[in-house]
Length: 219
Image (cartoon, rainbow, N blue to C red):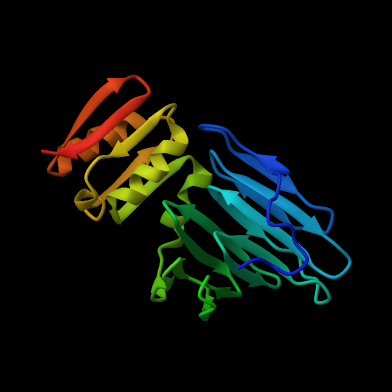
């Protein structure tokens, strides 16, 4: 779903590379924190404040402005907030929104809509909106403190996150492995530690074709 008045193609205004993070301050007093391998495009006018998350994950601390809604588009869905703190995370074709303060309205690509508040999250994809869930905010925002905390997360999400912090690509070769669950606390400076945990905890084996390509296969 495109937002009226916005181009279909956006060039990034702010971006991070592998293992990089970036804090951005906007003229209205709002801020954004970009996780590794993330990018946003910004379009602030006198009527609205619009951001497109082109890839990755970003945390927004929104300054109150009753005349101009703050809108974040990601993967054909839209999140709207007024005076709030929240994170938007695009991973493997899925978008997850988590709220730290106040509330946001989320519209999925199929136009289904929900409202979530403090300590809640929701995910959407091309098939529509998922169920609203509770979230441990300390874990959800741990990347801002140099940690990756996974609590019963699917392997496909863990791999998507680790790929942001490691040069090269980790690829799961069998879709049946994608929903295997993993938990753990890791330092973002040591993505290899996550790989060691995956190999130890799950029925998989890691094949290193090169330093830049690792395959996750069934054991």
